[in-house]
Image (cartoon, rainbow, N blue to C red; front, side, top):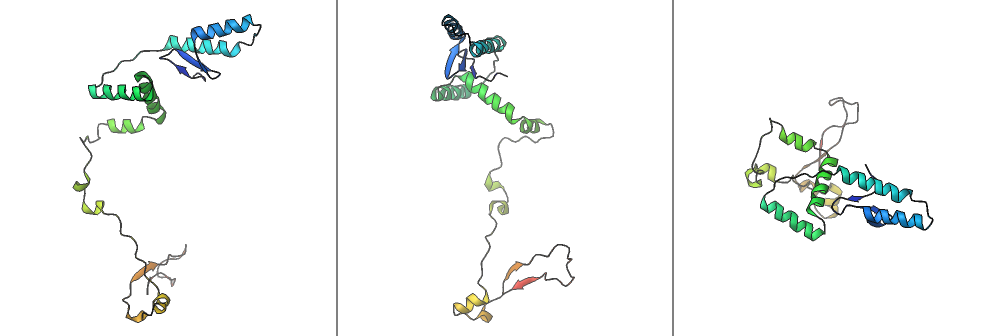
Length: 179
């Protein structure tokens, strides 16, 4: 693949900060030689790459709905690109990202659905976020606040993790602690 960007719509190549057509490059090379500058390797390679690419360009056609065609035309106008450029970029992005997700969708055992399931049709538990943990003060904080720790209902707060290698019931601390 060529290292220099090529605009197939304008039939131009980007070289040294400027877009050149084949005719522009030919004039540049001629003027360099006329001026005694024989270092024409880069412009010559660019001309060769542009000519080679334009000889190999293929035209593809495809059908779209009027809505999609209008949307593509509006996007092309808004971005200053041609519709062809937008389609080429989209295809290139699809090819570079891989087609694995699309292949999975095309398998015969895939269930086809017209639309995703709306949230209200999902079970209520799936819609609810998990409850946030409740923080409870310890006995020292309760005493500092002037509350008798014995008057507060005990609540399970946390579970101490078992050290690796120890089994439950081997005498290690593995129980729920209550405040």
